[in-house]
Length: 124
Image (cartoon, rainbow, N blue to C red; front, side, top):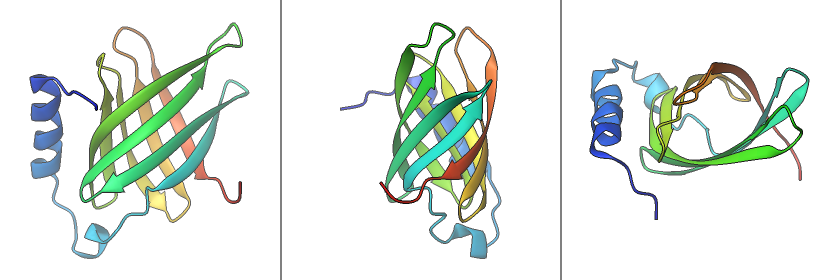
């Protein structure tokens, strides 16, 4: 089970309550599935599930040594905007820009922000 800190819950609730989203955008935004992006020539993958306005995801980022770092996230989606946080404070925040594309930034708690142009993967 994923545990969120009080600050995380407040941050996510503020995002959820503070967004004014047109009625059409409040339909299912389609974040569920597997996504990929390229960062410095290496593939980043993200897989999301959804329960109501809550989203759960796993983001896998390669590091410079060729190993990967896996982050389990929990957050919210409101219309096309989403935000999800890792238990240690890393934050993924973004917007679905089409049925198969999203723009996001993965901000490491004590590191750089990584911009991601996510594309939905089709097939296995």
